[in-house]
Image (cartoon, rainbow, N blue to C red; front, top):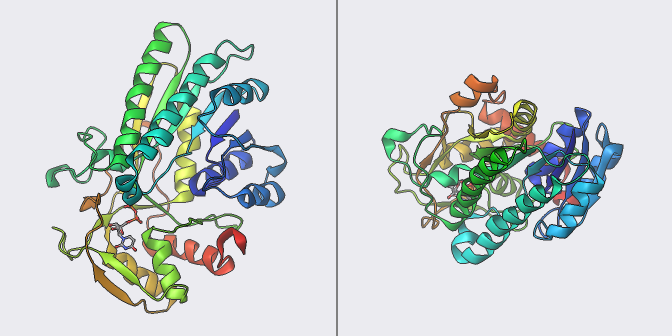
Length: 350
Ligand code: UDP
């Protein structure tokens, strides 16, 4: 297939691009490099299997005309849409940036898909959207583990900015179907993504880094003096938040599985998680075991926008498509992140 990967210079998008190339697909990455890394693209081109089939366009997803040109020139039939702002805390501070980049940006992209249907090659037929467990908000305890039919009621602008995209994708697919266009969409609701590609080419490199596992590893490496646990009075067994950590390679695998099975007229939603939650304290203890170092920890206030418990019931995608996470051991997941960070202590600047 000819796949356009938005945000392909970022963490999850680059892993998906790597997997698509390895599977023999043609890939064009579209990334404005605001938070993505040109070096991730260079490394994929130079070192990844099929890297010679990787195209790159430094374009913002909001540039509808440019996207339309790329869809036409590259005869794109599938979009995997990862480009987004993804920090819950930041979304509380800057909600309009989140609605602008995530919601309006995605709308522009879907608009370009619509226009691509006029193209000789038929245009975009499949749209795979990076959604998030943050769309569920703070589910009642009896709805955890979370199934796809759990009410979606986000408690932060990040989750809301993504939920709106799910909503208009459904409407866009329905309208396309009525108009006789074979268009399909999939909303993949990620839980917490972790780890790095095992070949060591690419990995997680955020600036600023806000995610628990890389922060804990940086603290273990002495690259920061210590770390803070955000809240210890949550209604959870040890008082800290519980999350479901899924390996980034499993996530890439889920994307190609979904892409290969999408049927025209469908707008499906799947939870992507391992189906078990770990508390912040459990994650920190696991990082200490993997790295063999102790981590200086301070107790801090709750971070605004954090729900206490989020973990998936991933049985729908298993039932429909036979997909399940193959990485289910937290320490093994963390070990891949540790390997990447040891080999690239400054991330892509290393
Ligand atoms: N967290 C923490 N200290 C940190 C970073 C994260 O206690 O320095 C907590 C955070 O409050 C959340 C969990 O770790 O409960 C996972 O946060 P992360 O930012 O990795 O992912 P999110 O769940 O926000 O997508």
